[in-house]
Amino acid sequence: MKTPREYYNLLFDCYESLLTPKEREYFRAYYTEDLSLKEIAENSKVSRSAIQKRIKDTTKKLENFEQKLNILEKNNLLTKALTKKELSEIKKIITNVLTK
Image 1 (cartoon, helix red, strand yellow):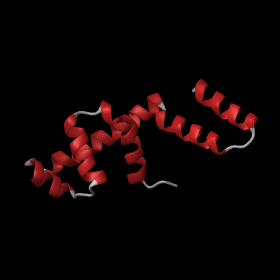
Image 2 (cartoon, one colour):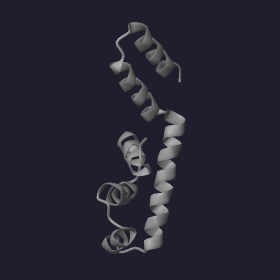
Image 3 (spheres, helix red, strand yellow):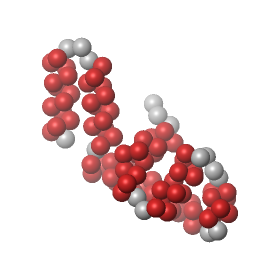
Image 4 (spheres, one colour):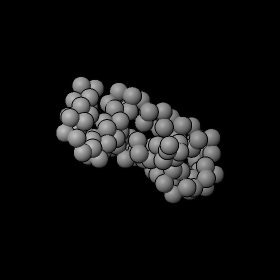
């Protein structure tokens, strides 16, 4: 089971290009560089609450992208297919991905 941090980083990997530069900057600082909200706020010269809101909005945005596009889920299913030995199992997973 993935932690929320791991999950959001995976979503970020999938949908990073759909975010604004500021969303990417704050997300990376918080989730990748593990900076506190206070540190990000000081570095960016904005309030801590503004950073908190932007990060919360960005994670919701990432969740919405995944809900609509399912790229992470499809990637996980295809990765699972690569571990299967039986051709029938592989075909079943690929068919499932293509019909989502």
